[in-house]
Image 1 (cartoon, helix red, strand yellow):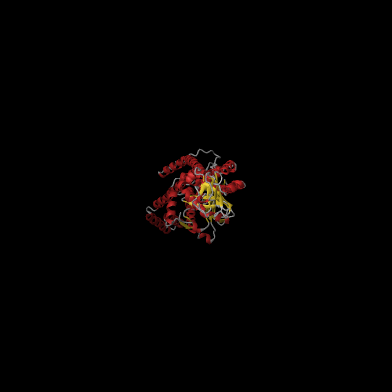
Image 2 (cartoon, rainbow, N blue to C red):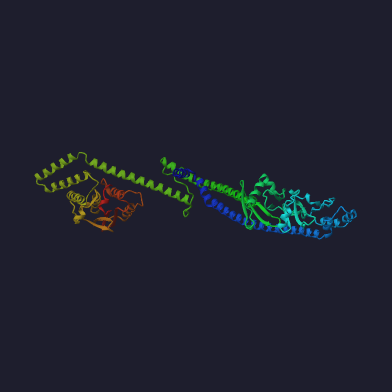
Length: 612
């Protein structure tokens, strides 16, 4: 089972989106519609069954009443015949004694009896069986008792009250119903009583009762004791359809007939068919009138509904398939543009953007949103790649400067040391101190063991620079940097303060004038370390200040050119932003003729430093 589920998931995962959409629509629309339709049809089947059973029960009751009415007609005819006492007396007398009496009997009493028979269409024959040795059998209505079989049937008639019906007559009874009645009990002259027999043909007695009326029920009159003997219309559609199975159907139903439970339908199964039967017991006839219907005939309406539902469902699914195919084709046409652009990007064409055709204020649908996001992603990738290139260029530039500075470093150190010793020998302490300061700067700038240094090391290098500048240019530059000890141990990028101090020396106090440079530190929102380098020099021209601030904000691509040293402000600003993000870097404030203040923004948490 687990393997099957995994296989189905894999097939679903690898299927096209159009198939997935079709499956989703089918499950959401078609399947619920089919289920609801089938439930509705089942409800209709149940209601149709109830209606059919009610109709069948009513029809059986009506057949029962009509059959009893016709049996009453036969009983009335028998009473009328027995009221002809002259006829009854004559057939029990000596019919051979006087020929004149016989002629008169024929013209009077016999003719009257014959008229009684003719006046009832249902009666095909009326016969008397008389135990009279002087009986004269010259007419079909009068027979000697020896012609009646079984001869002891009069005992049964006596036990049943003197009269009884038989659905099938004793003589030629395959298609005849008979009514038997005792006329006279045996006397001194008779060993057996006289029996009157009234015969009615099945096709006349039942006539329209068993005809095919076009309904769903097949009417049958079944003998109460013999399952194989029934009266029905062989031309009925049900009989024609059942064919050889009819006897099995009638036999199965006969086994379930019950005199007491006459109101409950009978359900039997013969072969692959189901049949329902409603019945009533006719006691005088000792027979059952039964209405039979097949489940298939009763439910032929709902069965056609099933086919209709299936046909409609198939049409709906076909329309859904066409709609999904058309919709997905339009959607995939736009997705293909995305895939084509992705393939171009994979080949290195980062400018392969997707043309969405949207206006400035239009958002579009989800695919348009994907396309817009994709275009933005390409812009971001290009920006990040440019940042990586810039970072690599800056690092390479710093490395080249470091290597360039290290050329003949030992020669320079030895030369400076020799000059310093000569200055001390000649008692020139100022020159010796200047050479010490210059040597310290050279060592600091040439030795790049790490990208970061402590703030105290950077500050010491700046002090050496100021002392050397004051000696070389005869200026009066004052550096004030009274910083807390815990800040002096703080790690900062190497050479991030020296270029700013150098700019202040060259631009704030040209031609050897005096200038005060103050370095202070502060913490902003427990997030940023602010190092401010402020001078009270000439300040920066407003136009230059505006262009500098625009570059620092990233609003222009023009480079910063404010000094001629190797690294410069641009190098410092880019290094800090490349490694610590846009929130860090340089900022310049200045008022011409008053001051210039350069602020270095670095992460406050020392763990964020390094790795740049």
